[in-house]
Length: 196
Image (cartoon, rainbow, N blue to C red; front, side, top):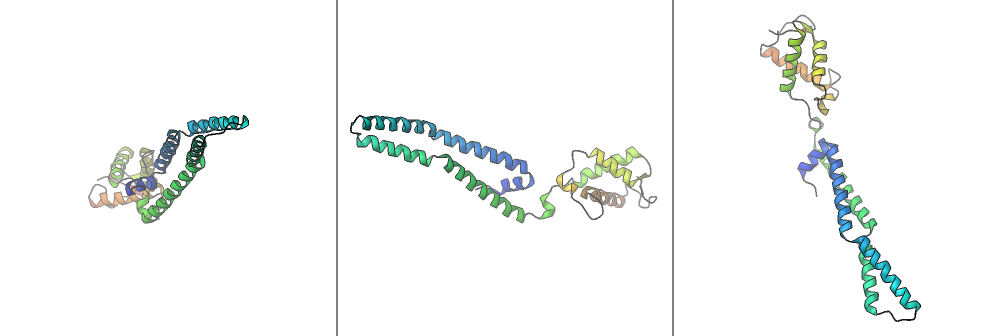
């Protein structure tokens, strides 16, 4: 069974699930190799050849040899690739079921991480300083987007009520907070954001 912490990682980052699955497959294949499947199969083939040769020459095959042959055959059947595949399929089915149950527990707003308000505040102030006094809000948001390129998180790109992407709405919320704190003018010229 997989821990809840691992489930959260898999829900947030599907690439981690892929890495986990690759490791699981490699481990199962390695265990399969360690069972000596190929070696046992070779021994069984040789043993059957000897039994056939004895029988063709009219020599009685000892019961011990027949028992050993049957045991080897049973051991190989227990170590068959289909068994390995059944184990993999069952394990992945359980994993998918666990992930689906975990995903339904995680609320949509918490499913995708977003950029922190502190980071948006820092980038907003830098963009406003670089663009100068009374820059239009759309230019500021575009400058922020360039600065945040490659650093925005999956939740930032989720569509929101006011803007195309959630991070833009959050940046406007940060601006409102900066106005309350007296960092940005409360009554700027329409459509322009200005520092105090």
